[in-house]
Length: 147
Length: 285
Image (cartoon, rainbow over all chains, first blue to last red; front, side):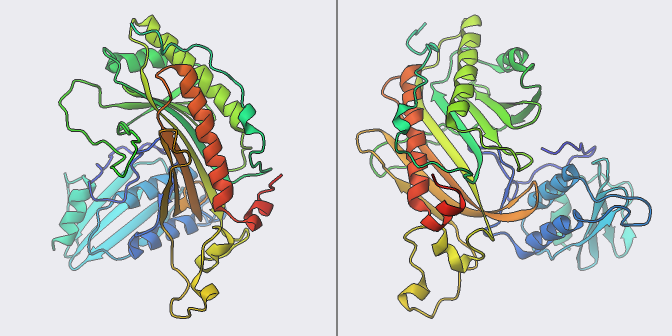
């Protein structure tokens, strides 16, 4: 479990790639056999941005911390399987991550802030859905896939 | 109250290690020693907190996990896992108590006690089995004393387990899945046989089970699976060896004897399964 604490936790869906500590070991390493290519590519991008140098954005930002990277891994592993492509992944100033998935006229944006908060946004036909009560990760991606 | 499972000081002898393969820098990333017992009557949610109070000086952090399934190795070709459906009032909780550097943790649930050592930063030196055993012995004693202080029955031990997780890194003796024969002994590859049809494997996922000793009730499980190591994002081939079985009796001394034997299975199995080339890299003595 990462040291960063998300303020709006997403719940873990059943058919995700989330690591379940079912045995007696505790290591959080992510099994990759059978992992969907989009998920593996997203994880590789997270890893890549972890190597950013100091002041990478010109505003004195550092690379995302290990805690934030672990939060990102956990998030990516918890997304349920579906007709998804590799998300756009960009680093966020201060040391976070921003992810965007698109499918048809729908989008999901998920940001992991430097302090560990997770913010989500749904967009349909280019218009953000305001006051969105949908926070469950599975529900978000079911919505995305059901366009 | 049964007294045969009290934490009587188990033998600390590891004299059976004579001739055991030994490595200067084995690729061990985590070890876990586990004792499983019949559900302790009366053990419930408040006891997790009471036990935490006893150990928080050494293990200040806690996490709550889903409980581990009750697992019994039985002779014959039967399912090794019992997935029983039962209605009970047993606490469906497993608690981790983690030390400050996060290298060591204790896990408890109503029918299991586990102690883990793991690498966190990656540069920690593997402390070796005698030290790990000593830690486990101390914590098991503390747990049993806690149960006694709460007037709970002593554990009736029914299964012991030893797990070693090893990370075999690319670029150290091998560089892709086409060179697995440089890691896994007795692995015949198509090119060796002159079969040119199959390309190099994209990945491997392997699980093998052995019964090292027909007289003892136990098995050795060996698995290989590629993982992304979270602490540095590298993909490694993770080799996990688990020895599991029933001790001769439910008492602590026999449980520790079984753990010592299980660990010898793991070490011998690790050496048998991997190549001499890799042994040289890991500094076999």
